[in-house]
Image 1 (cartoon, rainbow, N blue to C red):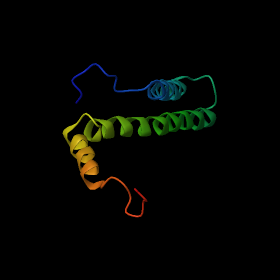
Image 2: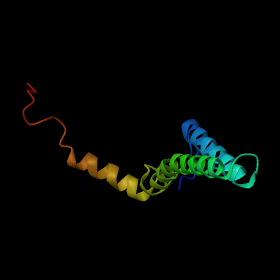
Image 3: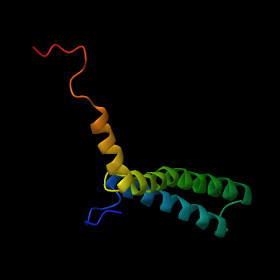
Length: 97
């Protein structure tokens, strides 16, 4: 984990999480409410909950991957160092002179 105060989420990530939470909340609210017919209520609630979950999965995945493979982790530093070591500099067919 990074020791500095860098945020774990970007504005896009935060926006997607807000959208997902709103959709899930609206879906649960429709399940609880009794204002519309049962069939329409369940279909709408299911669609909103599914949309919220679908918006949440990529955000959660991105945050988890960044925690384990980000440049501030030991694994990320090793991977970056390995790419530097593997890169021989100029391409073999480059005309250097």
